[in-house]
Image (spheres, rainbow, N blue to C red):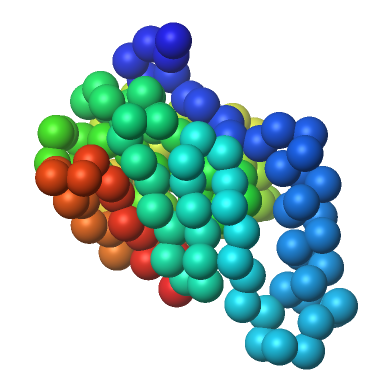
Length: 150
Ligand code: FES
């Protein structure tokens, strides 16, 4: 079971193979506009630009300051409180490493130490541009976070 602040990376070998196939479908191998629909691990779904994340299957988000990295969506989801969840791009704007740590106030890139606020703003470089922030809603009745990845 992950501890507070621990990161859960949701990508199995099978998911990687699926992602590779999807990347092909969304890029050079498809002429349908690149809309991707794909089920992911831990109950996460991605349909078009909408991602849903059930808390029941993502224990890291059941604790304040928890974080998950959803590799398939190139996004992170963090919990600030029982009702406040944020989703941001996981791609660092410096040299595109995956941000993978949340210390409760900053999201941190492991490559060169850039830090971003919970709204994506650069707190510390070398990154010069913010992380994209995705509109996020939380349905407390169902315990599902919905993220607009557009
Ligand atoms: S790639 Fe993130 S700080 Fe350099």
